[in-house]
Amino acid sequence: MLDVASATATVFIDGEAGTTGLLIRERLSAHQRVRVLSVPDALRKDPAARKEAMAQADLAVLCLPDDAAKESVALAESLPGGGPRILDASTAHRVAEGWVYGFPELSPAQAEAVRTGRRVSNPGCYPTGAIAALRPLVDAGIIPADFPITVNAVSGYSGGGKSMIATYEAGTAPSFELYGLGLTHKHLPELQKFSGLTRRPIFVPSVGNFRQGMLVSVPLHLDALPGRPKAADLHAALAARYAGSSFVSVLAAEVSGKLEAESLNGTNMLELRVFANEAHRQAVLVAKLDNLGKGASGAAVQNLELMLGLAD
Image 1 (tube, rainbow, N blue to C red):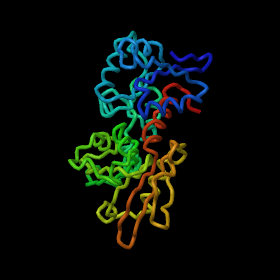
Image 2 (image 1 turned 30 degrees about the vertical axis):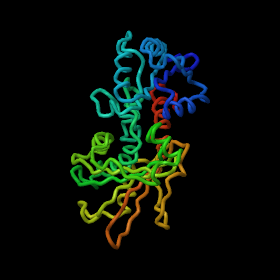
Image 3 (image 1 turned 180 degrees about the horizontal axis):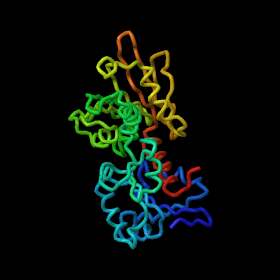
Image 4 (image 1 turned 45 degrees about the vertical axis):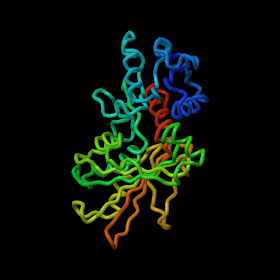
């Protein structure tokens, strides 16, 4: 358990050699109150070695494919007391019963749910942006839960794993590519559930020829919404939800009508804006974040600090 006397926590990153695992380890390397356990390279896939590391840890972070993450949970649960607390960065448990969704800004009670949860799932990068933009408006009744929603998003190629990274860095990938056009992207279940939507949204992701950074956008016909809200009403509802938040900001739309994707790289920040044309009664909600920061490793460290009582 957590060493209260020295305020030091022991963390095991299962899958630390992947992009997210490496960045979590990097972020924790300067953390004065966390000790990171590792297993030798040759034993990273050895169940006995991983189980031994889990037995010594206060918390295990899973940076693994879904099936491997489920196996790791089973390993942990075979330990006395159910093993360490778990933060899973895979897709495996994001909508699973008994798991806390690790987006502390989801609702006023969510940070406490993460703080006390034994099993927490780290959100996906695309859903983080979409949920941040949509959930406050659904909660406020501005967007009905059954309203038809479309979510468009573009990410840097680092979110696509080793294979995609290799093709882009070798110069053999396209400059821009839509994907998930079968409309069954694996992020859809969490996007729908935690946005509070009862109707399945259309989600169209894309990847561009830049390493990291993300924009998630949701177009809206304002006159199709109940009460015919103005853009200022959407902005006010978002601002009220995130007032005082350390990591989510609600900003004015750029007068240029342009927005680039990379300025938040290396941070755990997320920015929300409402772009609108009141003459045409149309608006676009836009979330900007680092797909490797608030969309992955940054969110993981934020959740880890909450779970271990290390957040300021």
